[in-house]
Length: 417
Image (cartoon, rainbow, N blue to C red; front, side, top):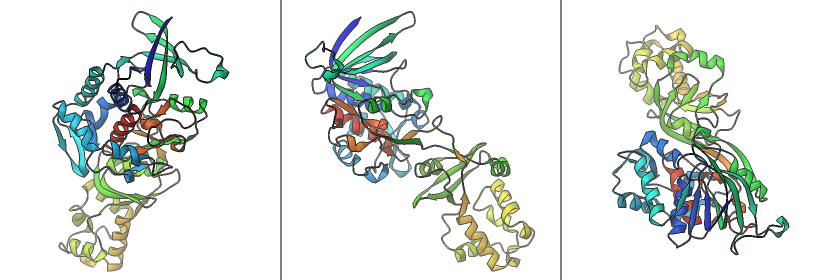
């Protein structure tokens, strides 16, 4: 059986893992990245529609959700968007700013992945793919009755290297172990609960998890009523639990998706209503009345097509003002106009659920940050064990925030591991 020692071993070759590897190796540490799939950075490649929304110019701790809201502050202040932008520019990657401060590659997401791999290569990080971990032993715990094969060894990783024609059992040991295995989101790209299982084994608390940045599904009767709207996009403001997001949403054959829906899904709990403002640019009932009365002799559906897609107006007419559908606007009582305005601004829907981890971009909850140092990311009760990235109970909003968390947390852990 093959045996090797590294100062730092990183579990997971995603965004946080690769950044942690480059960071640790830049300090002269010997580093090994273990990735269970056939390649590193799969989520990087698919992100941003293949253009990788790699950070956001407006990152603040308030853009993140955690049971401990102060935890992300330290790492985010030490590795800022400007730092990753410098890395991107140093590799000659062209990028562009889109709405809300989001930065995307002009070319392919692969450029960002290649930059991270080059940073790892430059610092002699060894990357092992197709590696299945079978056991992790805390060799510093003498109750395990294991004699370390290296004087600095705190952890022993046992597993199997796989290739097309053979399998090879191997053992690695390390002083520092960084867990960057991600969460449960998008299992086809490697999402799993491995990091949570390891944390529990090391007596680290796991906070309940749920899918985040995920589309909603609707109950069958409502979905049937909305079936003709599949594919229709609407600029709106969606609110839940005193959080609001003004972006587009999309009717799907299962329910609702689009940026504003993904954003609010981070704050939604089963059984909650979401409130949709279909006309966020119209602030008052008198303003609404003034706008539609510019065409006083037409039906309300005709005037409403200036604000909303035709198919959505047809649905609303059938369900909200059917008895006034053939009455000119100037003949509809002002009271009714006001009621219609109120409904347009406060359309309440109770989603039946979400599409789950299969399509979720992130996992809410995870490793309790109260168990981890916000400076070093080392577990307080387990010397040499670190958790970074999505596996932690820190989740960013849509728009490059989760990548910035991966860069910042990976850099921080790599600076101390």
